[in-house]
Amino acid sequence: MSIFYSAAKIIKISALFAFSVVLYSCQTSDPRITSFSVGSDRSISELMPAIAKLSARCWTSRGKSLSGFRTSSELNSLSGQPRVLIVPKRKVQGLPSLVVMGTQTGSGTNLSVFGPLLSSSTFSRRITTDIKEWAKGGKDC
Image 1 (cartoon, rainbow, N blue to C red):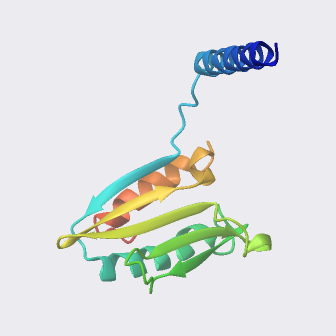
Image 2 (image 1 turned 135 degrees about the vertical axis):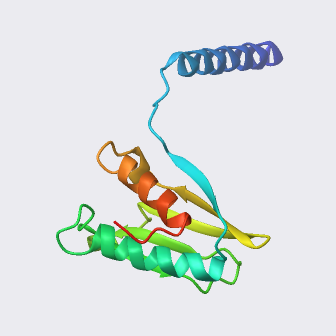
């Protein structure tokens, strides 16, 4: 009798799981960007410091759109993937709100950009446009 009871319980749990999967798949997905990658002809040692400086000057300095955040650079990464982090000013040790990570690809660099700021309708377009321009060598905000 206990084997039958266990099998019935497993079937109920499986049915509940299947129902949850179906319900989740019916939800509309969020069309906003949550991550993107962009390639650059510039070397990683040239590009990542430039992105750190530009993001600090264009986004997080006083009076700029992301002035509630600060730029934190991890340019001397032992993993070979330097990062520029945008973190809340009041929670510097917390999770970053945006990560720009560089990976060397031959003579160029691939940038992977991700984080909750990309889901913001206020900042997503600005961040995406700036990073793509900076990857090409742009220096403007």
